[in-house]
Length: 229
Image (cartoon, rainbow, N blue to C red):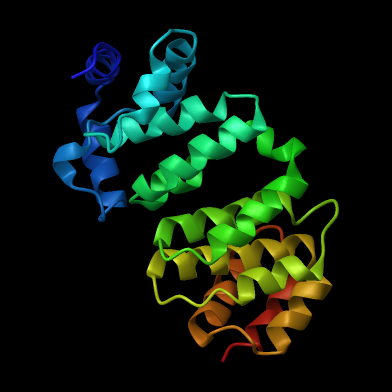
């Protein structure tokens, strides 16, 4: 084992919280329980900031796949701190095939993406047609994070609507995306729902999530309930 990876693993075990480990294992059924150390997210972020300042983390980014679940968090958090967009995209695309659960996928959000949205959108289009479940989920999450506010286009709704997948974690992210879109771009997203182009499961789960949201008005929730299929 490389010295840097050894240091990462020993640091993670030093931060281990057994009760949190038991809790976290239940949240991520796609992850082998024996690979979960049990480290809380704030502690992971603090550790990643320290590790980013040290030499050797580049080799750690190349040492895929990692042994432990929390190593993947550290990997994602190291990429997030990088500032050069081309390098971040390169490291992101190397890492995406090794994401095997929603928890790492949804927490991964490189900071520099916000300032490079035009280039990011090109990559999102490619990720959306990937055969990998979590690459697609990540793509939808990035659309939700960066493209539902300023510069919004109905095209972004259709990009997600056109994703055809039977994978549970993709469909759940589609529903989360459209529920968020209802909160931010209600009229355009409502028109899409009324067109019945979404798969029935995604359509109904979107309404369920929207009805549970505090960002949707009671009047809107009442109407959305009538659209269930």
